[in-house]
Length: 405
Image (cartoon, rainbow, N blue to C red; front, top):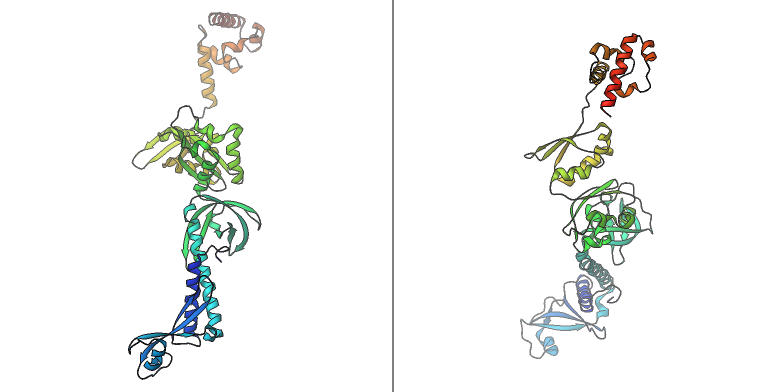
């Protein structure tokens, strides 16, 4: 028992002696006060019945006459007690069976107490185990010395493990129940990702790089803001690793969950820009009292900023600790008439060309001085201009181009 279960020898001997005495009192020696002693060296078992010394015996199970008592102890007096040795073999078959059950129960209790002592210092660490079976939706994981529980709420959506598979989890907590301590594991907890980074990135482990903020939607994406007090160390590069080796290892462990690593900044607006990349926040309005930030993004970037089922916006909000209101940037609609008016203004920049003449030129597609390249006098005549108008327009356009090149 000492080797296999890790149970202290003295505790085990005391438990067996107590179990036998308790069982004897409930069995053939019911009502008697029994004391049991086990020799720790030889394992020899001795039992005594404790009897009250009286001059008139009314209950032989509890009392002994003074004359008989003095055969055991010559100095005993009435009112005292003596211990009369009994043969353990006569304690009875039921007592033996009851004792066996009590001993097994005590062994289980010892094991449970040992489990708590063994694992109480590893809460918050990553442990590796083997999936054994399912019980009412829970995944039972063998950690070697004990079995742990991975409940559905602590699993990542979409992940499934078959019996015999190896699994890494965060040892979330140890719950004390009527059955003993339950070791609860987690793969969806945000600290699981934090511990993975601490194990994989040496700069985080030694404190050179610190994780300032984290937000996670298990199975979808994790955003992590990192900072380095050492200007020579790039915190993002340290976490990504050479050719992305470090972050790839973590992503592989998380079953392909996306990880955004950004540089931390105490200014929430700077951090917002970093967290939303490649989307660009515009028209930012900050409400300090309610800790809300309202901003707009381009229509093309709206789906990127919000993310699937709104996860990207939720994660950014958690990372900043501010509530976010995202709007679509309103684009000014430019009508055809306005485009024509702008083109006419461009032609009017050429000295000497009247607005009425400019409108006619824009109508045939000549919207700027550069558009006249390759246009001949004949082209303008074909478009309805007179010979004088064509000659005059081309001369003024050429003069303008030469002046501005």
